[in-house]
Amino acid sequence: MVNQHELSDEQSVDIIELIAKNEDTLSRLYRLYANQLPEYREFWERLSDDEMRHKEWVLELIETHAQGLLEINTRRANPELYETYLHFLEGLIQHAEKRPVTAIEAFANAAQAEHTYIERSLLAVVSTDSEGVQRVLEALGHSTERHAEVIDRELARVRAKS
Image (cartoon, rainbow, N blue to C red; front, side):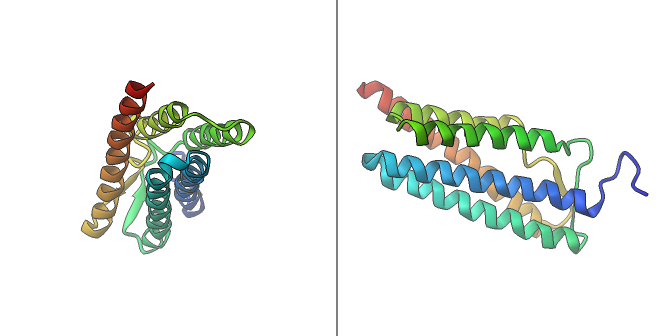
């Protein structure tokens, strides 16, 4: 029996899959923005591709977990946190599907999404002693921070033009 401070393997995999689903949904949002904002298509497509790469990296963590090379930090493992973030992203997609967004809206929404991911430390749930896994986690974190920076810069530039 799993005590309240341990997650079963299935619960751990569920958390990892939720993280991957968040990456996939963020990629879909950016792809939608690429289609709606042709003057920024290349920018959004690049971010969308990055998010798909993140999803693949996260899904590889399932195998890493099965090998015993990482654990899910039970103090941070809160599926509701990931589900809330997922619903937020899905809401942004639904909004944009109903009514195309302006460039300012897209950049502001993306900035909020990336900063929320960073502020809530959504990757901090994973702990490992493996240097290889640690490098993947660091790459994910750095990439998310870089996304936030480039989106913030572009948002400022778009706002200055309007």
